[in-house]
Length: 160
Image (tube, rainbow, N blue to C red; front, side, top):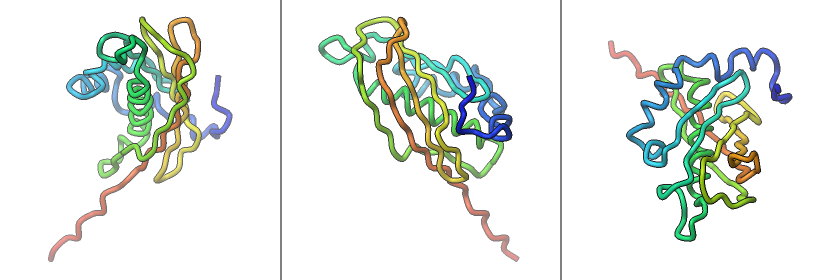
C-alpha cells in the first residue's frame, strides 16, 4: 500500500533506495541501545521501514508488560534510521530526533512487537514519521509520532 501523502517522485527516492543495507544498519546498531533492546531492522520498502523488538527481560517493566519506553525507543530508532536513509548520500547531513510521543493502547507480555514507520512529511530540514507498533497477533500496541531534525554542516571557509 502506498502512502498517499507522498508524491510519486518522493516515493522513488525513498527508503529502499538508501545506500545502506539492512545488515549494515543492524551491525551499526549492535553496540548501541538498539542492540541492548534487541531491536532489528527487518524490511525496507518504497514507503516504509520495519523493525522488531523482543518482549523479554530487557524490554518489560516490573509487572511483566512491555515497557512504554521500550516501545518509544523502537519508534525513534525506526524513524531515525528512515531519515538517515533519505540523507545518507549527503556527507555533511546528520539526523536527530527532536520530539517523540506515543499512545500505548494494548499491553504485550511476550513474543515480539513489530513497528512500521511511514512518512507524514518529508521536508528539507524536518521529517515527521508515524510508527505503528503491533504484537504478533497484529493488535496495535503503540501509535507513535517522531519529528527528526535534519542538519547540515556548513562548509568551512578555505583560508588563502
